[in-house]
Length: 258
Image (cartoon, rainbow, N blue to C red; front, side, top):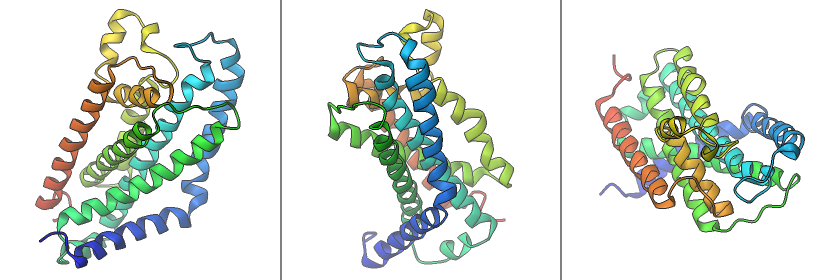
């Protein structure tokens, strides 16, 4: 059986190592997103938000809160796994795991859990910070937690796959800088896609982060540019596909064996 005490200990050890790693250097891992979020709230929420009309029936700052929380969750879940796993590859310490009797699925789950932990911690911190700028009412708290969890898993998997493909440290930054960040800003964090011309609305539907951000906004405000069931289905399907692909790459030792 896969679910044995030894495998659980291996999973817990990887998770403990991941949490210890990013909490030990909290000035580099936890503080920067806090400072960035405060700036977003000050500039977009207070300064610019005062001159922006109500959006979807809510004040502008309330409208952007879910997107800012999700943006922090996405970036930190992804970053935690991609840097941690690539560092293990670079330092050759991953070889110790590969030759151990631990099933690959528990290695993968351990790294995912580390990304989920960091994503959740940052998400809670950003949500608490938002309370200093506006009053938040969460209409669907269980849905909010479910979407945050699935999103953390999804982007932890994305970070894991990025680390598997990366051959040098420069490769680690390509996806976050040139793909993830633009998709996040174009995913409806700061605006409703109803404001876009018809052509751009259709093109925006190709952005997977649009579904995540709108589903998360629905859990807060009860409004979304995308059908909530379609958005949730898209997130779940993407997560399943990436999990299968990441596990397949790990089983084959892609980028790990010379």
